[in-house]
Amino acid sequence: MKKLHIALLLIAAIGIASVVSMYGSTTQYVSFNEAQAIYRDNPSKTVHIFCNLNKSKEIEYDPQKNAEKLVFYAVDSLGVESKVIFNGTIPPQFQQIEKLVLEGHAIENAFFAEKVLTKCPSKYEETQASEQSAVIPKQ
Image (cartoon, rainbow, N blue to C red; front, side):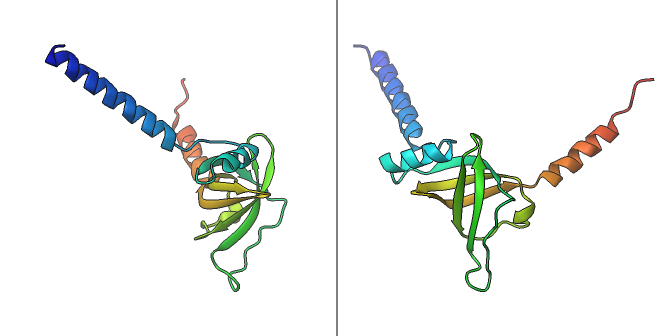
């Protein structure tokens, strides 16, 4: 074999190995039910769940007992509700948030979030309103 062929094979092998290694370490967006199945098969795998905060259920937060413990209920994109337990810094204005991305593990009947990523809808509503008011109608 020529040196060029060997070099091309080596480059292809490195490319395939890097794609395979990245695929194994990526997190995926799943439902609460899928997160439980993933945890049973691979307890160390972290998953992401895109969900809505269930405002009709009580949010448990007592800063006198534990300022870094938050318990709430969320509904995933398939309509499945789960109790969420988060130990960490509480996101600002948490009760006004609607959509969340939870990162963590589903263990038994609860989702243990390592991270809670939030988007405040009012931030985007103001932007959309200002964009609509900037449009000049045709005459």
